[in-house]
Amino acid sequence: MPVSQNASGAKIWQLRNRNQTLARWAAYLAGVAVFMWCWQRISDATTWFFVWDAPRIAADIGGRAWPPRWSYMDKLWGPLWDTLNMATLGTLLALVMAVPVAFLAARNTTPSATFIRPIALFIIVATRSINSLIWALLLVAVIGPGVFAGLLAIAFRSIGFCAKLLYEAIEEIDPTQVEAITATGASRWQVMAYGIVPQIMPAFAGISVFRWDINIRESTVLGLVGAGGIGLQLQSSLNTLAWPQVTLILIVILAAVVIGEWVSAKVRGAII
Image (cartoon, rainbow, N blue to C red; front, side, top):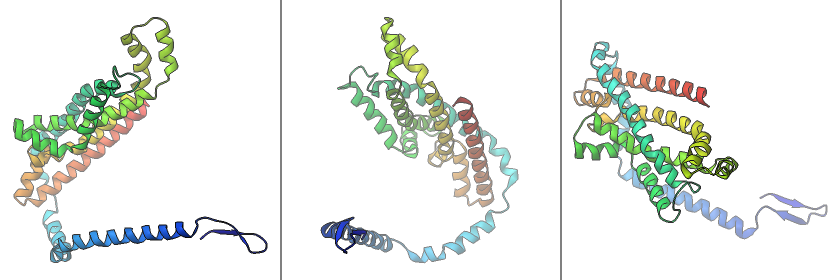
């Protein structure tokens, strides 16, 4: 315990008193007890035989999965194109819906902070709290399997993300520019078009590209629940234990994500 003493050895200051130290150690002990209890529950629900046998199984699957079946690439171009379209169109649809929600959620642009803003915030929270895979499962059940269900799942998942970052950017604008345009007698829509939108355009562009980059990653796995794209080919190959095809699909997914990250970084650098 850090303690300061004077020349005679008398204590003049210490970081914590006795009660604070005891409370700190009690909190540590409680944390360790909770951790051990959770670990015990996990251990009881785990079949440790399979865990210890996992390295052998992984080595066996790895041996059967290499080399990749490059001839299968001809069947991946279409699903890969569907995946990119799913991510791109889903992002565009999300932005169309997220922009008005963001303006309704921002304190300085909402028509009603009492009624409309809570509704907009609820939409943001609700769409962000449900994973895209869950959205895809629900939409596949409602409208059937296919790329359209995946596109809507990407869009619904992205609304909250884009709207949250955008309404925070709206609340952080320079109010003096808005006041100057308002003083000229401009209408509410003119103030928004000339005083607010130009200030948030860099943030809007960065958010759009960043979310598109994320959606490329998410769209590659939506096919696992029937939402189309390259994930559907991955699910089919896993079901038939075609491990060389699985390896090739994973390589293609990795390449698509890396290229998307590179394009996203270039676009953000050019905009910002």
